[in-house]
Length: 273
Length: 364
Image (tube, rainbow over all chains, first blue to last red; front, side):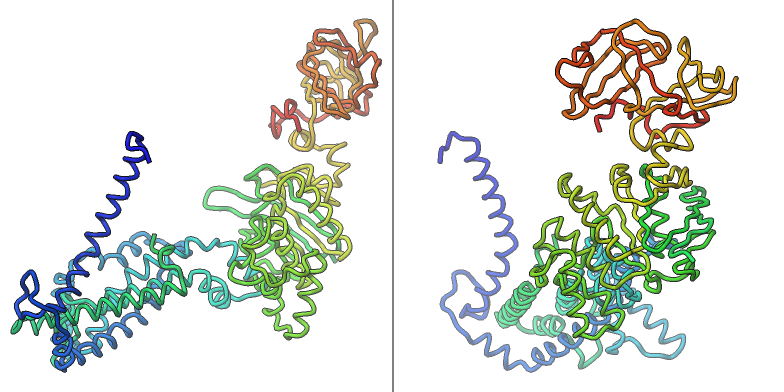
């Protein structure tokens, strides 16, 4: 290694840059996990000791467990609906030739561009209007919340599935049709397996999006059906101890595990890049 | 009843006519090549037979049955795609078995027929591989086996050799032809490579701008082209333009060139194949076309002489003369006289474009 060599400096700057980016991304998570073990109630630095008791406290707060179950249920249903509809839409957008295709594609990606609070407020007003007009209650019901979360899962699915569908050459589908496969069989036996990675990734990201969503949910959630992020915010109204950090740490571990497991079956890095 | 019949086939895309008035009747076991430059409509024609493109007008009959509007899965065709289009997520055996599965062939019979098809293309032993683990030539043979195993009424090949290197291409060409003849498959083959078409096909259909320009055996098309397009697309040729002086003579500038007939006063184009031209060294002698030797290209068994004449540059191809032959000593600038028989000079209407004006200089 020669410090007078330009390559040396280039490598150094490159590695330093990459390291800095990783630090910015990962440090907050490390900080949260670290904080969850601090002994004192009001977080201060340096810690005067370490403890498990915030985890015990989190376990004792029954609303967290309830919220967790609610969130899981909501995210699962929203993911199934969103990924099914989003995949169908992606197939139509990539393979179909119809007027308004670009407009539709923009529309389906739209929810990504709208801030959650705005989306939530809009949906709230819309739901109330429906309620007034036809006397059908959607606000504060589970179906209403699911519908809202489907809006979060569709853009991800459309993006990820479209990307992986572009990698499936149309002639492979034609080959299947030529061999006697009807359109749905072509999709089931050829198209779907070939874009499996995209669909799995879409499901994963949709699930995470829905599971951790606060802004949208806050405005539409009904009493007794709070999700975990909403319960965490509620807790924050009364206490500011590291219990929330403990809950967050558990979430980080769970989502991390989910990603690792998924990555074993389909290579996520290939789909997302 | 013909095996495959195309009747007045036409396809338009908004204002463009991709294929127009294509007629073809194929006998059982015949191999017909659709040949033409890119964009001539040959692939669109093939795709209309397979059912991926619906004709705007005309009919497609397979075994006498009108399938013009039938979806691809309901037509009994077996197609080999240009990029092979193998299913990357299936093994070789599953790829080959897919068509059988769609036809609800039982598992045991399927296994036998897969093994048989793989043996036919000499791929036995690779059944459990994935397409990505095979070489280009092997993938090609999987694609062949996959299309053949279902015994299609019509076998369709879309530029199947274009992704192979030159050596392999010559090999696979022979293999496909042998297989096709052994199985008696009615085969429609799309290619832009004239050598491929000439060596493999029973009949050629030369297409240009959506139209059929001539249909016939390789020999007919090469020896007796109907028009300048076919003459210049198939093989190399010399083209002279002029007026017929009397039957058998075309006046091109100062030269009177031998040709096969013609009506006096007619403006015509004369096509002469380079290998039909004789070179006589020296300035002496009468008739024929005087000229001077330009570039001489030694090709091993053959030699190309580029001769400058008053009627323009002329390409002559001849077996390389023996050591000591007078022709062998011709160096650039030497005077020569070119001649050919009347029968070798094909007279054609001079009313259209040629496939490639620079083909004369093409080293192929």
